[in-house]
Amino acid sequence: MSSHGEAIPMIARRSTGLSGEAHVPGDKSISHRALILGALAVGETRVTGLLEGQDVLDTAKAMRAFGAEVEKRGDTWHVQGVGVGGFAEPDQVIDCGNSGTGVRLIMGAMATTPIAATFTGDASLNKRPMARITDPLALFGAQAYGRSGGRLPMTILGARDPLPVRYATPVPSAQVKSAVLLAGLAAPGETVVIEREATRDHSERMLAGFGATVTTEETNEGRVITLTGQPELAPQDIVVPRDPSSAAFPVCAALICEGSDVLVPNIGLNPTRAGLFFTLREMGADLTFENEREEGGEPVADLRARFSPDLKGVEVPPHRAASMIDEYPVLSVVAAFAEGKTYMPGVKELRVKESDRIDAMAVGLRANGVAVEEGEDWWTVHGRGHGNVPGGAEVQSHLDHRIAMSFLILGLATKDPVRVDDGGPIATSFPIFEGLMAGLGAEIGRVE
Ligand code: S3P
Image (cartoon, protein in one colour):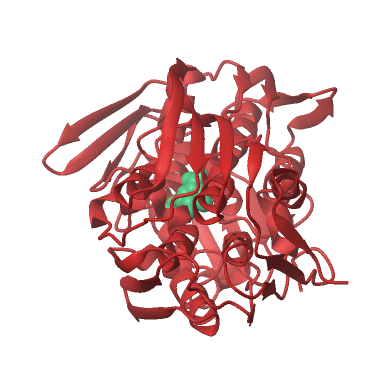
């Protein structure tokens, strides 16, 4: 079952000659943050290019429940913010659907305002760990009452007199970092987050864009991010860049399908997000960055991906993991068509995503004839080389959009078609996936 209705079984068949331009939707991470920061600013924030996936729509709905006005007029989303500390107490349960980013950032944003809110999600989200958020929020003075193991549904009582916090994140997580920074907004003084490994830095960049004082320092302890509390956030006009995590799917499809040449324009190459593209180039992918430029302070390029028959397995450096954490599933698909092993260490976090992504990919790849070894925080895919991956099996998507899309990409270059039990979750992050891939010539469809 998908999170919002009946299961949608899907199938992908061997395809050749993918071509054309793939205009992928707006960045999911930036879209959530645009709505949340817009809701915390004083006045009207306007957002274009917002990802209209279910995850982000659930965040929009949540912001309305906390008192912000959020509506779309024409192509622009308008957010009337209530100011830092101005959230109203919602009179309904906040359902964040499938979205870990949505629920964790919103919990942070409300935790230093004296209101109560109860959060829930779908079957996937309600299994995921929330203690990583509620532990630091408790330091501000917020209280959390959830199910055992720190799971949703959960009620947060925001702190009446919040204290500023200094917190070293125990796991490399931009969601944890962002929850602490958002909570720090309504606390007095300086809130400090220390991360050993750099994770995506959209919150820092966007907070600064909204007028908060945020500094980042590289030290022996790691990256030290300092936010000065109780700013007045000024509304912004935001153009959301296209999502490199969504670009990954047409790019990888082009690399493994014979005769392909696909352009994916306007993709952000922020170094905290672009690890996959560098890894693919190390594997021998014919992937070029064209028309490289800067937009809104971020490096941007048009990605051009062409069929690459001589891919080689690689060892992905563990320090790169955070910059491509959402891309390991589709990387493992490309690795299946490479010669030799692809070893991916330092990726324990993959086990607590929308699904246990190591397990979900390993089971599905093996069913389709690809050998995979795994440990708690690593996995290895034994590539079979181009033209040698059998396919032919049905896999489970486990309510995980990236698992569903990765296996549909797999089926574009296996000998026999690959079926996915439920493609419904794809709508959380990439609602136009099916049409976009079909436009390139990929045979991906629904099973009637
Ligand atoms: C995200 C952070 C990452 C990533 C998720 C989006 C964000 O999660 O997997 O898709 O927008 O901050 P973690 O913080 O759990 O690594």
